[in-house]
Length: 87
Image 1 (tube, one colour):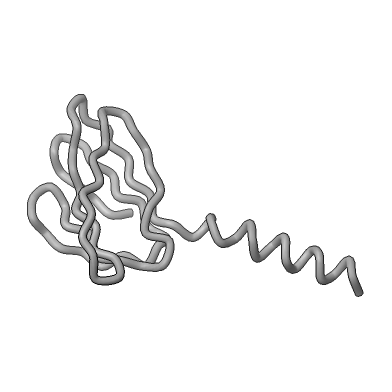
Image 2 (cartoon, rainbow, N blue to C red):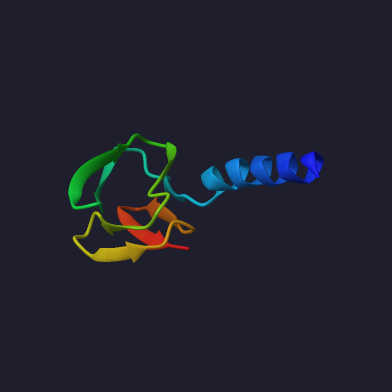
């Protein structure tokens, strides 16, 4: 019984970080995303070649071209040539 409980807790803790959106900047210059989460806006600056995880519980993200997209927390935003694509 205790083993099952420990395994369930460990799985829940590990899966909490597994469900976050990620952003990767494949450009040679810094790119910025605007993340709206819980009513607050944050600028997320990604240096050249940087990858970050964000938005674990869903959010809205404004892409470099001004488009607004809703994320559930499982997507990857890939920026290349100044254009962001959601995968």
